[in-house]
Length: 310
Image 1 (cartoon, rainbow, N blue to C red):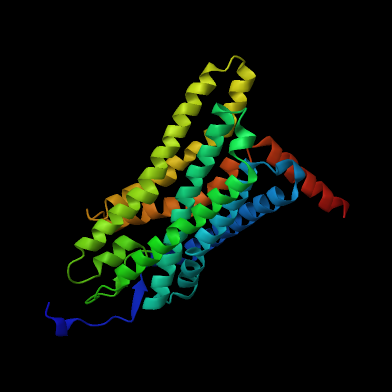
Image 2: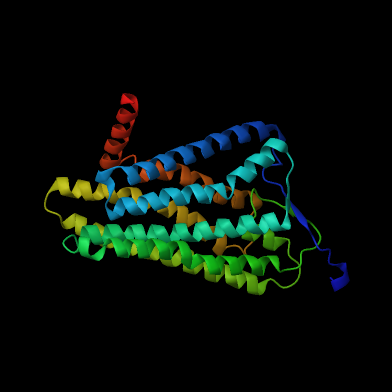
């Protein structure tokens, strides 16, 4: 379209689940319960890993960071979604939309890197146990976590800026429940080839690379576990690692969403995949990573018993 026909959009409409008007109340209740579960379970894990002297190893240091990150990650999306479902006012300003996307991308990128760091930690603990205290000393742990949190910031801020510098014209309706890259790019006018290439590059760097590192770590761990002489030590090593393999669901859905962003997935498929990595995985992560862990359960019991005594 000619330049003068481009209307400068100042706000979008997030359609979220508007196509199911009879389910709005139910969805509001469901997502509110999920949000409370995520906040409480991750908050509890964060607290006990900080307070309990028995949980001061690198593994729990990473777990505390991961739990805090999950709270941030979900809070970039769910409060706005709950507000939209509760009030049925779905308008979101351009600035609010860009801010939501930027924080979501930053926390999502950090999560991918932190999961790779956690897999590396398990790799050193199981495959190189004698050097573990030396390799994963406190300074290294701090550096790994700081790196995970900060590497993505300039990339994701630049990425968001690039997307929102595009001219938007015509429809202002985002057929999604948050400001994600694929549905926003669908509303852009003009050539979006550069933006689509950037989506691929970011998805490979923050999605595929950590995912391959995680798979590499776990395949090495698996071969070491299978060589362990006693069944008890095999079972113990398996239990600390089997849980981490649920990241396959998280990475799988992220990679499919962003690497196929140029292939027009149906909006329904898009939303289902997004629900997997934005809401369902964060809800199950505390149960998977922590509540099957004997030390965490012991610390939790101690905390509950202490509160009872007070």
